[in-house]
Image (cartoon, rainbow, N blue to C red):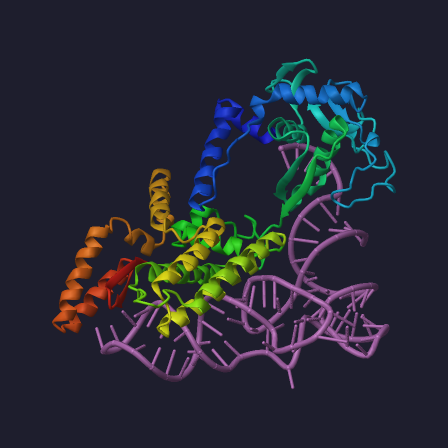
Length: 428
RNA sequence: GCACCGGUGGCGAAGUGGCUAACGCGCUGGUCUGCAAAACCAGUAUUCGCGGGUUCAAUUCCCGCCCGGUGCUCCA
């Protein structure tokens, strides 16, 4: 509950809960577009005040938390010698009180941080055993995490900017209260760059997911780009990269289509129904994929394993070596890959439509790229009818008419692929 | 200024004390096709920011410099 939320909610004349709900909903919609699973539990700070209060009380019993003149409660950092262990900071040399702000004089030490904040006049507050006020930022996370996951748990994630002071403070509070290891593995993702520079509104390179969808980029391509670089690495997010990933995703989808839909030779009497080299390659890909993810989530290597397989299997298939029974392992490899990468199922058109509808409600339809707007109202039936008409023209060798229809469809963002099995189409 | 992380082909990026420096995209040529698309094949970094050092051997380890990012104050 930061000052800004409290202020803006008050200005809008609504409660904190109602005010934040809108942003929470938009956030989860975006995650859904990117095929990120919805969390099993979504914890909201306003619903867990008593847990926070009792955690502070536990610290107060040990004199680690103390009450200042104004009714705020602070954490006594001097009582947690390991402070700084996560962010590898050494506070030994810092003189206490060397640099102290005017409004911090109530603290015993400048570095002590707030656990509970006394209310300023007119501010939203909770009446608790600690006195009136609201929780400090760090205590929210410690209290809720331990309430749902226990005193000690495996993974805690966050952006690299939160390592200090937020996560450091979480450790200090939690471990002081429980005398147990709070988190076994910290998972800090690095900020991305946009076109080689940091993303910021003042740089003019600040894009939301919806901005990108309105520009015509696909949700799957965005996901693929974000995932293509290991989380510890600083990803350079570029439009060129997005276009590249669009094509890479398309290649994987086309490959799966090919494996699923082609009529591969069935074994005849006395023959085995699979090519051993293909099965071996698929199994090797699965192994390499798992090993890469097990190695600190090396998504770049994991993804390379799948492309290695795709190239090999395509080549073998072109050479006529693919057999019906090879399908099983190859598709299993794709399934395993997609369980993590989640780009093979094509929901892109749905999310683009969703975003266009949203933009219309917000009066921002003008921000959509013309080719994105052109896809509105292009139904599958309409496409199918044109595709069939073109096939007819092709059969009568009326190539001029066939090409005209192909161009017309291209204008609607539809790409055609002719094959022995008939014409396939896909949204560009 | 200090601390931590990074700087690899046209772009994104993996990786390692010594084996042909992955993978994706792009580009060039070829196969296939009515033409395309898809797919495949071949080629595309004598070289891993710059300078020095350690070593039989460094892109990989150490030191310095340059560049980028994050933190170092409040707030979340």
